[in-house]
Length: 71
Length: 287
Image (cartoon, rainbow over all chains, first blue to last red; front, side):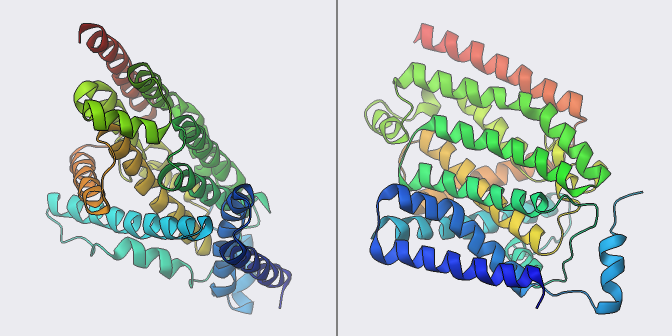
């Protein structure tokens, strides 16, 4: 598991805990706003990074080093 | 329901309805251009599809800024949902959120390393002049109602009738702002097809899906603000009906109008803003 996926899994767990905490414990409004604004986007992003397909090993280099940049 | 549950439900509604409206817009545009067009649900399916597509991050991208800026777009439109449907807060905050959206367009373009993204980045700064109508609308609404709070504006309309009849030119200015955010719009210079997909060119795969989620929420919120501020508090079916009508009108305009070049786009928006400001002040003095 590479660093990106490990980081995403950590972010997913932290954001899920934060959202569930705000749902169940009903903390002060400013805490809920903070959780909603920062952790909902983090949750959606981390789900995406974990669910995305990665390129084949022999194609990975050309995907990263030769992206379509219009030159 | 507690606050977090309220926010989650409103964000989900904004995403689902926004996605379907953008799909509906493409469908209407296609039928006007005598094409069958994609199904209405296609925008939503595309968003989900991008989540499982192969993704990689280009070497030219400025990491982690390249990813963080996409997350920022999501964060600011969730803030808009909180300020709008959840709290009925201040319109000034909404103006701030819209200004941040411009900054995100600018930074998404510059962070990718793509020349098309950089062109879009420059255009985002250039088109900031198009925010003038929004600022003018806020000022005119304040002069008419004496408040910036969305809940108070709705109460004002319950007593005095919808603002769209009292200040039609301000509504027209806000509509132009909505139009500028519509895909394929004549004013949509930051995502013009002459620069591929503009600031989104290098945001493909999962990041494109992520941006599309934010754009769906943004589209819903722009229409929600328009309907709430100019027609008043509606129930959900009437909101949806209003949103479908406005989306249909923007689709008709987009299908029949070519994209303007950046100079003309900004010039026309500024001219419309001046007409709207001067006309609204004259209307307020006369009536």
